Length: 301
Image 1 (tube, one colour):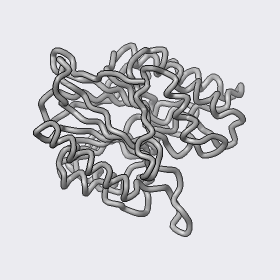
Image 2: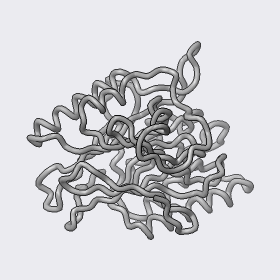
Image 3: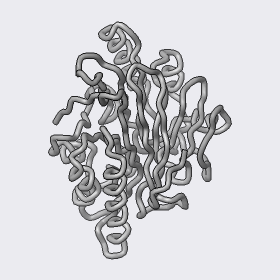
Image 4: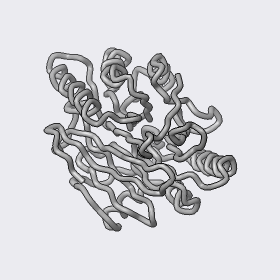
């Protein structure tokens, strides 16, 4: 496992975000839809030629699935075949039943191009980690990518979806401070997780709104302050989630662009054309460009 992530000589770094692929059990009625998903993933990777692939959760359905490991291997197979460095965070369905996050992580880490890490064992979740992107010469950290495990379900009687815990927020703040000290300056950053935090609802009424909001924001009922910490620190330029298949919008709230990916999988609900979100960073600049590529090759900005 491991890769030296670097900006290209022209100063760009391209990420493709696939989300909610929802590979099923391999039964006949699901197989065709999953094959379409795999073909779409391959098509987009070949067209975009990214420097990094990010999977933002719900790669599979695990509830009621006879062999979730086999489903997971099918889900990540087209990414592995691409030989592009890749990484992932877990969604609420990946390890819902019959398999653990640790077991899925072990499967991912069999591939030398996979950069997913377990992260600290003393905080909540599996898959809280940071990746650094260096300049083209490999000498200086020019960007940071934070990844969070947003959990599955909230405990009763609260109910609903899980939240990113306070210890994960503290971990992010510590990592950001340490990186600033090491680099001698604040490093521009992005963040990736599956379940949106509550501020995504306000972002729809924010600035520079693009995209579709065709369902409610299915966020946790508890706000643990991750967005507030990002605003206060000032390094995170944008966040990227999945989870809500009929939302693909971006909106700017207090200087941070809150974005959904575009649902990728055919084996799940949602009326939006399947596709992926592309994110392009520029070395030494606190900005990024982002757009959606669709199954028909169309681009939505």
